[in-house]
Image (spheres, rainbow over the protein chains, first blue to last red):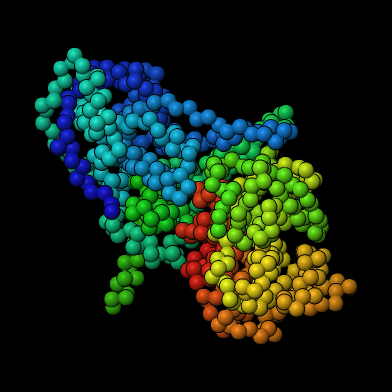
Length: 356
Length: 279
């Protein structure tokens, strides 16, 4: 059901790329498709952007501010454009460029996998699925900082699922692993005429996570069976300002709102879809003013249940991938790991009481 | 039940339909008769809803208030409560609106066959229940007693006055109503809707209760029904939420892990009871 940290890198064909080879490889990728990779934005923040020069790519980055989902579920997209005078509308064409997402961390890839689940369950969502077509992902290892807790949610740094190639930094370059046939094809196209070194030994060194959830991830859905009425929810509500940043930066959040935007020439306009978030006050409000999730405590509870129980009950996977964005960028310094550990504490106290 | 119109629809694209009749019911509510394009039939179940779309104003979920036995058109009763519904109220016969749906589960009408049906309708809750009332009346021989309880805040909010006249005059239907705040002309019952429940003689084991009204009403109606020893299994509710997309994606209508637009708006009470956020 859940992930195992045994990723099988050992069994994969691998090559050594020094930095000049890596730069050449990026140039090659840019001839194959649009390349999107982490780039520096401001002093200490990073963003996935279209690569115009290989030099802009940052290989050693903790995380981008925005998750990769913006390329599949844009923050704002036009569902249809209308002419209300004639009551006509036109569907939006979704451009289908080949895209290569380069130097992506495992938790980010797993976030896309969770979104794939959410958009194919029940009614498959054409817009999302159309954007997911023709995408190749190339992974890279990372060094956990004090916000990452991917291991605690069952995703190892070296989880290569859904990657085509995987880059592991070594002295003066990278070991490049062939994960699937698409990756193999890329390497063989690129390596034509080059002699790529495939002999190097390697050992993945276990990296320490500073932030940990107290229970094994397999037990978390069980904890969430018992904490619905926990006082932890109201404790957090004391600090939370309900800004919805955690929703917007979450790689697996996908709730949205739809609004009509009218142009100056009033009869023409667009029906637009926007990211929305269950932490925002009006999220569950209906016409007439009734708000079905008015309390901040019930909104936080809903958000966490969507990550650890509601969708998990169906998908068999946690829908938190441990990227740490919601915590790092929370203006009220609320830590998701602290919430979970407090819930675990309450749960284990309760279990002990029952035994006594 | 064949769903004639829905199979051809893309998720977010409305069918451009026509308002063929507008009827003012109260100061706040109008009934609209809608014709789908190309003589399509909506093919709904009582209790389902559609997304009404007006370009420039967005979309809103509106429950269907006519029985599927009335064809080919269907009716929507719309309260003027927001931007879109305000615009809709200004629309005349011949105006175009977009329709997506029908969505949601609706009432399982075959399961109700042979049973007495008790309708408990609070305020505009009569509109969604009217699709089921009309359906059971159209298939009268398939159902036992039809008992309709209807309560509004005041006499000016009473919907479907002509139907009510018909229900009151029919020997086939038991109809009782009350208003919270009577005016000087009101001659009927006064008090909240729960005051109508105790006097009614019910064959509890063979009665299905369907309850729709404002959020505050459910708890008290269920208490009254429990007071008559009605088992949970015989109670059905329809719940209002913000069904923005109608197709189980946008998240707005969720009650705990349940998307109201998919697994509701009709809930079997034993299920609703399990959902902490439901009532």
